[in-house]
Amino acid sequence: MTDNTQDPGTTPDQPHDSAPIEVNSSGEAVADHQPAVPRPADNQPTEVLGSGDGAVAAQAPAPTAAEQQAAAQQAAAQQAAAQAHPAQPTPQYTQAAPAQTAAYPTDAFGRPIPGPDGSTPIYAPTPAQQQAYANANGYGPQPSVGQKAPKDPNRRKGSVAFVAALAIAALVGGVSGAGVSALVYSNQTNGTPSSEAQGPSSVVVNNTDSVNEITAVAAKASPSVVTIEVAAGESGGTGSGVILSEDGYILTNTHVVTLDGAASEATIQVKASDGKLYAATLVGTDPVSDLAVIKLTDASGLTPINWADSGDLNVGDTAIAIGAPLGLSGTVTNGIVSALNRSITVASSAAPTTPDETTPDEGDGNFFNYDLPNRDGSTPDTQTAQSSISLSVIQTDAAINPGNSGGALLNSKGELIGINVAIANAGGSSSASAAGSIGVGFSIPANLAKRVSDEIIETGSASHGLLGASVTSATSTDSATVGALISDVSSGGAAQDAGLKAGDVVTNFNGVPITDATDLTAQVRTLAGGETADLTYVRDGQSVTVSVTVGELTS
Image 1 (cartoon, rainbow, N blue to C red):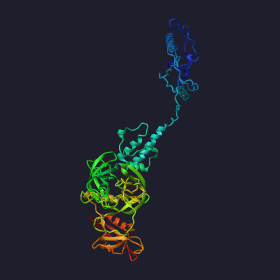
Image 2 (image 1 turned 45 degrees about the horizontal axis):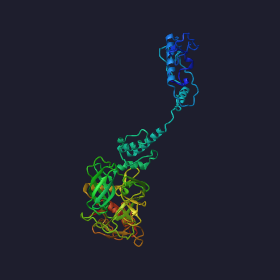
Image 3 (image 1 turned 90 degrees about the vertical axis):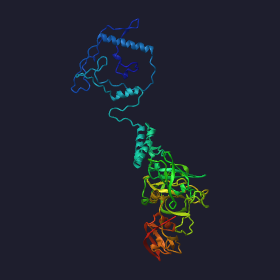
Image 4 (image 1 turned 180 degrees about the vertical axis):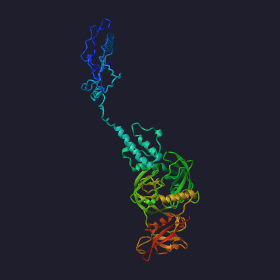
């Protein structure tokens, strides 16, 4: 029996089950001495629910006088309690239709009657009874047997987050993948403890429904990109770098560590993507390619960058830049590969020969900005140190700004395709007039960057090819085709050994079309000294291809 129930229709107790009682002057219940009148249904045989053979349950014995007296006393006590503590009004809900009578045998007191084997049958309410009880007690619609429960919208969010995490983890893999998964999972209702999250803290995923390829690349590569702060006296600057090894070798630009050629002994501090700070020392620079390697102090367990083969790139491929433009660490921008084998000429960032030479030469002094060229047709190829250098670069429209120098340019797999080095500037080359990105950025190809960095780590310097000739850009008065015009050949040099003469026009070098003198110089410098390449030139209207073994440029 259920206590304090206002609606008898929701419990097994029915009004006709009650027994009349008398109360004396002291408030005590007095047993009714009239014999109980049995109802027709009390002593009728009833089939046991679930009985396969249709066995009939034993008839329930009539209650004794003691049982009747006990029931009367219990009812009196309930009535007294109800008078002393009136029931609080309950919220009014829509009353459900009366439930069907349960199809199981009970005795006069509503107790289940044991079956032939002595077991008590299990009562399974019908769907209508379930819903009626739920409605009466303020619960929402309940699924009936055989029906699926209504979907919880939060479950879908969690499953989407999981799928998004898998999409990132498939590209990231390993520990970084787990870290990104933890960051994505934090949007679920149950959450993930922050102490369990690993990987890049700078890559934020708020909307798991829109995780894309760029997010995945950023999550994979960000732990391999660092911010570099350089100071010398009162001068200072910020650049970027990529991690080459677990123990802290970092690849960046020469102009980052020499402050555009103004300092030879600078203090270097590096900030990793996880917020750790490291002191760093200079391993070596290569001003010809504007690459440098530094080494972190007491570093271990870092995440090295994954290299791509830049020789496999196509124009139109995805290009994603990560670095610290204007000191904003962890900035991610994207675009495409706009051009390959683009040649540019920029100021050399070679460090001063003595530590006290900290003032750059008069002029632009701003290596990062590449002035759109006014061709004068002259590019000497000599043994002496150059005030400008020619680079063969990847052109991209991914936004690159000062501070991105030395940072990563990545493909859609999160692999390094280039080291960001310069941007085109149509507003002048001085720092004061330099604008930000105009959608024309340049990056040193990964294949050259890897060769140079390996040589610097091994020997402290890198090797570059030398053709042994002075060249200018061909004009219509000199040639019927574009190319690099040989104006002079050095005695005993690689050009002379290959049979080149003054007046020849070089149109192809090592499989790359040559359109002017800058193209040829940049392609020759890409090779290490002693390497061999095919060279095509035009003489008297005839095209000739020869093999040339380049010399080595010395500083």
